Length: 291
Image (tube, rainbow, N blue to C red; front, side):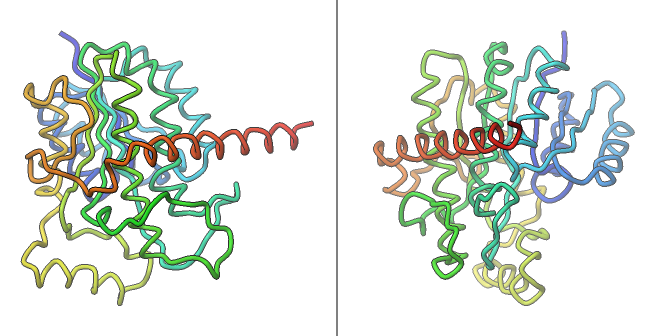
């Protein structure tokens, strides 16, 4: 019997790292995707010491850059003929407005668009599995989303908190639309609220904001460890009970209703179409540059 293969984004810290360690204990071969090669070398070595019966491989790519994601997916498709699980975990919150080098607002690029491209590029490998699963790590913050996340290029129109909430809403909308588009395939699709986690998440916005983030959950007595937060992801990756489920939202290892807005089918389609259009625009731009 060959091991099942799970690809995880953002696996060098927090929930992604905890998920990788727990899946290694369950004999999953791991594909880790992220930006920091030194961190990958450390986590790969640690996991291989834990379990030398699995394979651990990492690929260095920036999930916020579409061309970077496409290039690494091309390499992954050459290296593998199957992926059983895709965990779209990498995410960030940016209070200040920033654009990527491709002209995409950074929250949109990091929390949604990069994973949209990654998922679609790797679908051929997922379709080769008899029990494929796609897990999108969202947040309870999706409930504060007001509508379609936009590529905000004007700093004056940027609200970091709202853009983050809209990006987490996008994770759920994407999950539901993906389920519809994959209804004829044996691919399960989930969105997950991992809870309030004590990690370095949001520390990029400064120590003050990071402490406020931790204090919010601490005062609600809902602050949990990364290992605890990874439990629902690990359950959805590995549990036989999760097989065949499509378009489900989970919290604390139980199915839960997501926000009312997340069930808006027209919004789900609009997000998909907007994402495709942004990717096409970037492709045209790259073609023009090469001419």
